[in-house]
Figure: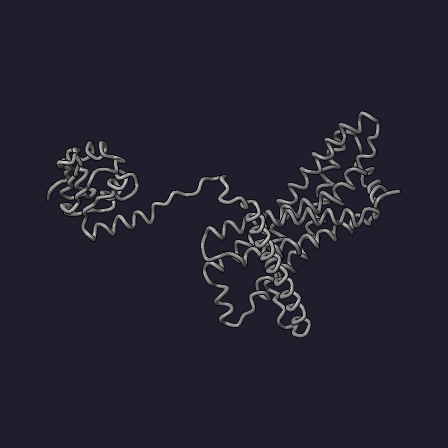
Amino acid sequence: MADARVSASTDAAGRQTLTLDGRWTLRALSAADGDWRRWLAAEEGRRDASWNCMGIEALDSTGALLLWRAWGRRLPEVLLIRPEHQRIFERIAAADREPPAVGVPRSPFEGLIVLGGATLAAGRHLRAFVALLGQLALDCAHLLRHRADLPRREISANIYKSGVRAMPVTALVGFLIGVVLSYLSSLQLRQFGADVFIVNILGLGIIRELGPVLVAVLVAGRSGSAMTAQLGVMRVTEEIDALATMGVPRSLRLVFPKVVALGVAMPLLVLWTTAIALVGGMVSAQFQLDIGYGFFLETLPKAVPVANLWIGLAKGVVFGVAIALVACHFGLRVQPNTESLSANTTASVVSAITIVILIDAVFAIATRGIGLPR
């Protein structure tokens, strides 16, 4: 086996011809003495030389890439080469495409193109979401006529996974939020001698706003992502297609139980987290402002009308249904690859939290005159 060799000759017109012989493979090039490296380095990028590659016995991708770079990433003007070796360089030329520079617009309408693409993508999401809502409405109508088809076990399992198993983390976070809010509020109220108003701040802030929103964010990150991942894995493993093949409606068995379960579990979690947060605030108020537990419990119903509790529970129901719908929407859009699964799971959590904040703003505007003490 001959190693890779490069020899040069000059004709009468002064034009240089480089002749390549031997085996231009990874193994042969590694064992060669290195003369070919000096020749290629000296001729790199030159366009006036002629290359005679007919003497090459064997050529693999390593040798071809070395020559391709020595030729300035394009074929020389004068090249003698075997057809089978020519095809290797043609494949390299087809794959050797420089990516477009980041941040440089490819056309004067680049911004309009990006905006149009984002608008079309949002339209596709909206159309798919409306179709999901319509299918859910059809499932409800079907269950009103055929109550035996109600997926009781699926609903019960989702209530347990999304509600019961979320109680420890929501209780811990709620208690700490109550302690922090009470501590920070007491530092300001003490300066004005308004210690008793700590009950009003904690009651309205936690029952009406912080409780529902805090639970919604936790559930969106915990249960919403789990729902999206579950449906996404079923899409990747083609389990959803198998259900359709067997005649099992995917919306009735996969989407409907999750929506109902979160719609039931969320207000209960809101009530649970709100109570724990008030306990944390009450404990902190006792240490910071020396406000007794009895006074706190007696003043709370007077300072916070019961309408605020109903507003908080209503938010819980709406938040739960919205989180479940968003999670199922993105879960059903997963393509059969892991990259799509991770991207849609992330988009599900971000979209769910954003929608929760938007819905909370709508609630704040719609109920601005309800439940506030005169």
